[in-house]
Length: 134
Image 1: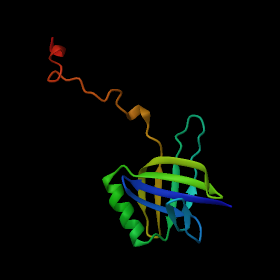
Image 2 (image 1 turned 60 degrees about the vertical axis):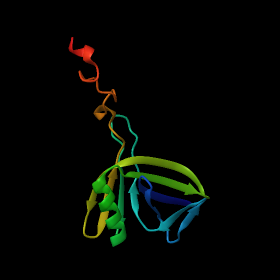
Image 3 (image 1 turned 180 degrees about the vertical axis):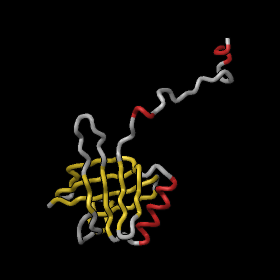
Image 4 (image 1 turned 90 degrees about the vertical axis):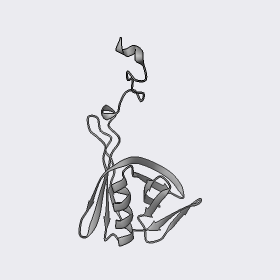
């Protein structure tokens, strides 16, 4: 039996759900039962893979957690598919958008675009390196 799970995390703050009517325990990790739908990312050439998670009839606790941590930024969404207690598929992307609708929450996650990253972490300034001014 295949079980799909979703995990949202920011640092040590984590919420986990399994698309089932019963909770799931894998080792020391527990997933709460909650029906959600997921559009798995398409890893086609010339496209950005996106993972879209829809949480219907989200409770106030789910809404509050997601609103709080999405406003702080850097939330990761991790999708795992389990078969007989073993993760057979894992995809983890940063959350880029959270849409809070009246009857559901729609979360969009995609990988970081490497074109938007700085090449060097160290900034070379005249203050730090006076020889640059010559």
